[in-house]
Length: 189
Image (cartoon, rainbow, N blue to C red; front, side, top):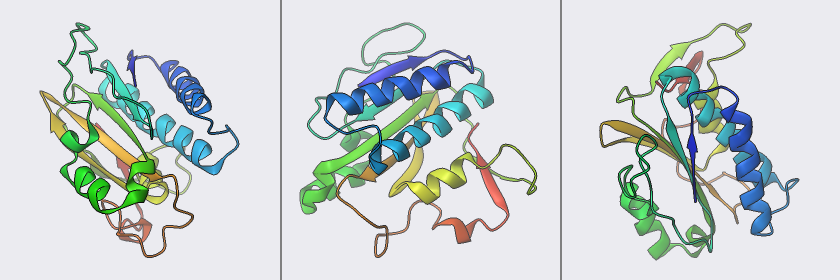
């Protein structure tokens, strides 16, 4: 499933509502930890795309048991122009996990694709700063996350394992956890 995002801060709220409605449609309650975490991750990644690129973006959500929809270019609406919709295509490790780990079939994946080719870069923020911690939050909350080039832009993705109760013993996410960041926060541009 996907939602085209305009470069407008009001789109962040619309993206959260859209994600909640998709989860409800699959029987995942809004008060379940998975739903709360996913909506926060949607908020962080869409905010980064809207604020730091000033360009349209596409929010993609892959839920267990949902069939992928064709991607479309946010500018032209042309099917398939924004890249592959299969998580295994955008993250080769996803197909390996699905083949060897039954819990991977219950993985919820979120992607935000934009037309900025600039990679996520570390940014130092002071303790009183009101922003600049988005990707540090993603790293702490997601079971896995990363980014890759997509066409002339990029896609930032994260995954939550629906069946996992704890990240203990799980392989480290991209970046290795909060301790790897110390006083750094990350900004996707």
